[in-house]
Structures are given as structure tokens and as C-alpha cells.
Length: 65
Image (cartoon, rainbow, N blue to C red; front, side, top):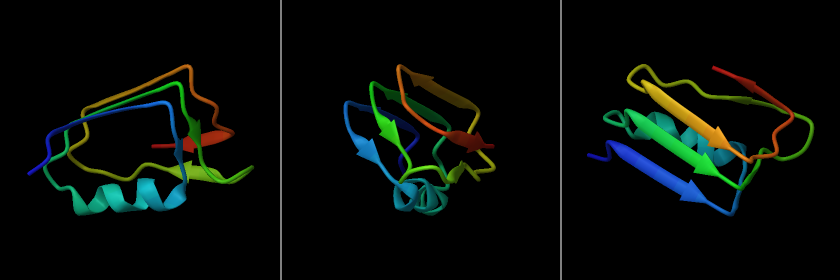
């Protein structure tokens, strides 16, 4: 039952964001200094219980929540 996830300095592709659906108790996601996505694609963040999303110093083309 993961509620808070903090990530830094990495590359997180589309598969990572699709896997968030399998974490039903996740309410906080903080990502910093990371490359998000696999190119020019839009990254969907679909999660009903996610109340706090923070992205600091990240490279991302497009994000949909």
C-alpha cells in the first residue's frame, strides 16, 4: 500500500506512468531532475486518488492529468 512516492534523477517512460494505476493508495507523487516520457508523446497521468503531483526540473513534452 504505497501512499507517497518520491523519485529523482532518472528516466521514466510511459510504462512507469501506466503502472501507477496498480498503486491504488498512492496520493503523493514527487519527481525531480528527471526525463519523462519516450519522446514527443503525451504522458497521461490517470489516477483517482492522486492529490499531490510535483515535478521539479523535469523535461517533458506534454502531460495530461
